[in-house]
Image (cartoon, rainbow, N blue to C red; front, top):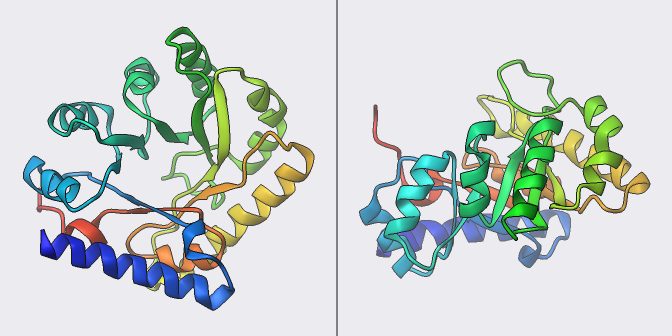
Length: 229
């Protein structure tokens, strides 16, 4: 437990330092521990250490973990297949990876039918136009935003992106700048889009915080190296 507490505290210190560099309040940044490939034993230790909300990449994996950690809250941070949307609505408190207009429409219908509306979501944007990444193109999102903002079953908390794969964290900065600039521009015309920016992971979260991240999704820096497959 001590090692997990120490790693979480170190992440908090790094977030605070990044905030100080740009004049932000550290309380404006939420640290979301991401549990991909983390075993039940470490999750129980994490919960005992005071972690109560976790991010997970897959619906099935989160479902199994939720059964083992009563009282924990779950956010989906990985790609959501349309055929698992119903289970996702039941399981997750927030979904960070709404990467298409069709998925948003489906989630809105399902959340309304399940009495979960409005479901908090982030709209995933592929600001780098990287064919290996999920997410809507900026132009696609801008065109669809009035419809998305009017969906009765969703609460648009903000935008989400994944930083580019780079050797130096500083090289990820253009991705985060682009998402922040896009958010500012879209919200000027559509106030129903929230100001949240879900961006930054273990390798680059300090840069993301400097550029306005309100949620950083941290796995390895808290839980240690993932097991080799």
